[in-house]
Amino acid sequence: MKAFYKLGIAWLCSSFPCFSQEMIPSDSTSSFIEIQTYASSQKRLPFWMYTNQFGITPTQGPAAALHLSVIHYEKAGFNPKNWKIGGGIEAVTNYSENTKILLPQLFASLKRKNWELYAGRKKQWVGIADSTIGTGSYAWSGNTLPIPKIQLGTTQFIPIPFTFRLISFNAFYSEGMFERNRQITSKLKLHQKALYIKLGNEKTWFQIYAGFNHQVQWGGRSPYQTIEGQMPNSLKSYFYVITGKPHPKINGLTHFDFSNRIGNHLGSIDLAIETKIKNTSLLIYRQNIYEDGSLYYLNNISDGLNGIRIKKKSNPNAVFQINEAVLEFLCTKSQGGPIANLNPQIRGKDDYFNNAQVRDGWSYQGRTIGTPFISSASDTRERWPNHSDFFTNNNRISVWHLGLKGTFLDRINWSGKFSYSENYGTYDVPFDGTPRQFSAALSVQVYLYFLGGTTLRGVLATDIGKLYANTNGISLGIRKEGFLNIKEKRLGYFRY
Image 1 (spheres, rainbow, N blue to C red):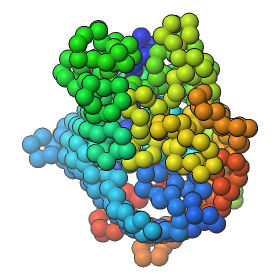
Image 2 (cartoon, rainbow, N blue to C red):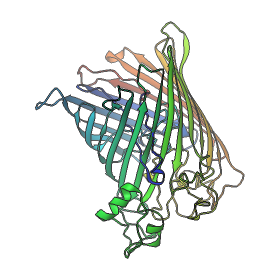
Image 3 (tube, rainbow, N blue to C red):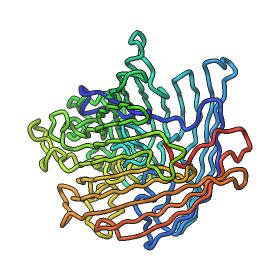
Image 4 (cartoon, rainbow, N blue to C red):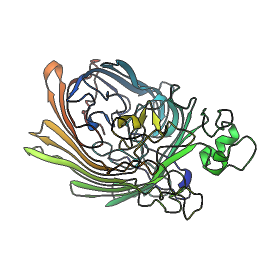
């Protein structure tokens, strides 16, 4: 996976997120139609059936879904050599007790070489981590519907001139808007940016990645820690949003605003190294968490996402093989300690994905934007107490995760996710007994020549433990790519 970004320690307390993978090549069309069904032994589907699916999979069964997608890019008439125009629409109708129509993608795009300006909803992964069989990046995992925004950025790493292609960068800058029907806040804005640097190229025996991503919720209305319900939203306030600098004490700001930051800031600072030996690549990565400055003082340095991915080329003569393996460990237990204090030696109680002003937290459409293991309190409300009216009641966790991907008989693709977590609740409302949870899913897909080429997919999943109710689930689906009868590049089910 050639999509990682890194670097930035001076902006520790207020930094940025990045990376957007191309779903299809330029000058091409991708379309598909898909029918999917879901069922489980309990009303709630197992964890790995609905998480990190860009918010399109229902959380409860039984359910069925109709999925349509068309994405197209072509050369622009005014300068076909360097410019491309395009756009896409993806629609999902989920049929269940609460039937919903969702638009996970709806965007217009203008490209020039390796730069892109787009507006609307577009699927995106941010940060250095495996985006297929891993747990997802800490701050931006693909767990919820894409947030509508305007974004300018690169589509891949671009070499910096005069560096002999040994130093390249990948970056973006965007502004977006959260949904209007949030539980507590309204008119909330999103500021997001990222910058990642790569040292090395395809000719060097290893590459080093470093970078940061930065997200801010700001400018909306909230009944908490505000003056007459309004969060700071002026042009001057925007300067402090994008820089993360503390705002000086003036009239019109609450003590919360100038003693913390303007808006709710969070993200990760990422590091990775990748090497290739013959037909095998090895990627080792680390995401360091920041939310209120604890990382700057290294008070929460034990928290973060750690991963190792091994990937090898497929052998067409093998009956059964594992082509990719990912092992990850996610820890968010420290948070700088149990005491919240601006003293650099203390800091602490970062309360990840919660915010005293933005009480509905780091979420969109009720789902966490970041790692799905820090979930909404509504997911566990029947079993575990709420953390007041904050978004999550379980942000102190440790997770071990194994992801595997391979082939069978060279035409059957399979993948598996296996996760074990220990859940501590929050510092203010700890869980009694530290509930353990095991969640797993096994997916198999087969390409058939029916109707000119279709893909049949099945998923088996299970939850066993104390955090969620024990449940088993199954999903069956059939997908036809290229239904527009246009010459298209066939894409697999397993997203990358």
